[in-house]
Image (cartoon, rainbow, N blue to C red; front, side):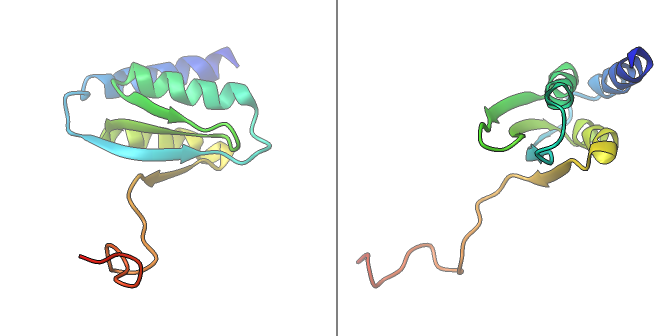
Length: 106
């Protein structure tokens, strides 16, 4: 266990050197059966790499963050064992319109 944590820490510290790169908004989620300490380690590792946790979800094991592309890639690689899903945080719409003219008048 200590070796695993040490390896994770070294990987994130290597990414820390490239923390000045442009940051990307992501959502990192884990399956419900994932131990809580894994989610905590992922958040701490992302912070150590210069990232910022912007939101922590309570109903699901997930968090939103802003981090460099290298830090995000490190989390993806590290999270493969736990089936972590790392996806870009973006606005999703059901259609291409910004708002429906049926309910709103411009």
